[in-house]
Length: 185
Image (cartoon, rainbow, N blue to C red; front, side):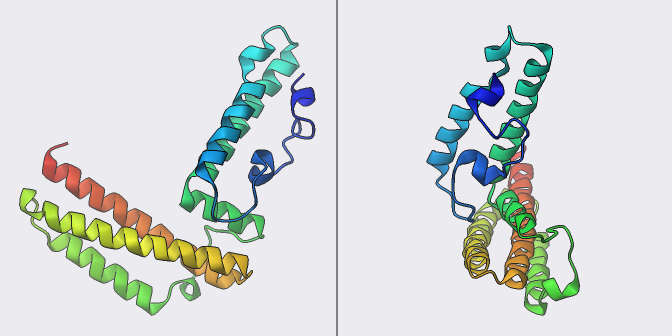
């Protein structure tokens, strides 16, 4: 049943890009990704297999989980970048000092100091907003660098951009937490 609705996927051997029938690249069409996600969910939803054998029902649940994981990964720029690196045989979690330039470390220190020095009340909300916009702009530039390096198959540069994206994502989370704390959330 499930194998008939999606031949070749019943053993989960396709990578996430193949599953969604989109190019394996950093830039994705999010509306196409969402449309394909809905199609796959409709095909594999466990309710469609209510009268099937126990094995087929289990397979439908597993496949639905696989679809959800693939969608979550491809939807997130940071997770997508890590996944693309892993498809190239790179371990995105492995970091050594050669992946982090002195410029990145200096930038990290400066941004963290600026964040720490802000008053802990509502008077710093405008500064936090400016900082968030600055960091988001840096993130977009790093994402573009990652995409270019990956497309050119310069994996050392792609890895470096990925680790810079990780830092910026963490900083954005800290900025948002600072805003919420100042607003009393």
